[in-house]
Image 1 (cartoon, rainbow, N blue to C red):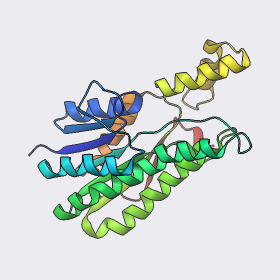
Image 2 (cartoon, helix red, strand yellow):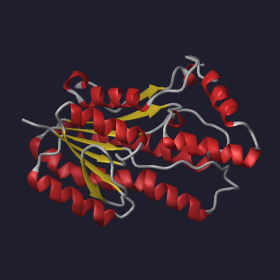
Image 3 (cartoon, rainbow, N blue to C red):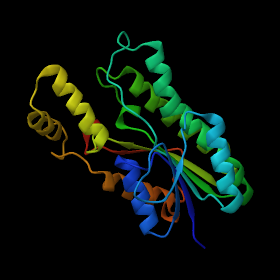
Image 4 (cartoon, one colour):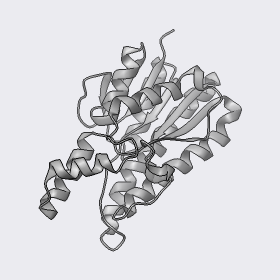
Length: 241
């Protein structure tokens, strides 16, 4: 029987790679995003709107048993705590954290009914370590790590697994936008900044979205049936030192 994935933020970057990986491996993929993507069935949905997420997922659950939820929708912000306004903090948490909360709460009835399910949060290596000028973003990724752990414990009795995937520096539009903003502010050369980022990784390169998608697919599979409540780091060794 064809399995179903509900994915938030599946139209670009890591989300796009995840949608492609699961769809090409036979999954029925529903992509909840604000802009269309290449893979999966696109459903326009602003995940900061709790009732919208509930309505969309309940309609999916009426027709399909939801096997996997991947919460990927999110955005980056560079600022220390003094440079973070209340509006900035709330906007980032509404997307990065409340969006994941809404999606998780909405899929649980379907997963509980069939006593099976996998929930995966796309966090960051910043769920484990701090970086300068990353106050709100770092805070949001720690929240996703916590969500994975508590959900794993609360719903293990229903055979529902929850994990957080914690990528390091991955070459996505989000990455390039951040580099572009830095170069505009500092006057630095983008090629040089990109090379420095690659050199700062123990493996000497930037990760690719397809690599994150491959790990996500593994964590959603039966081969990872004993993996829950974990923070799966894939950062080229950045946090090992």
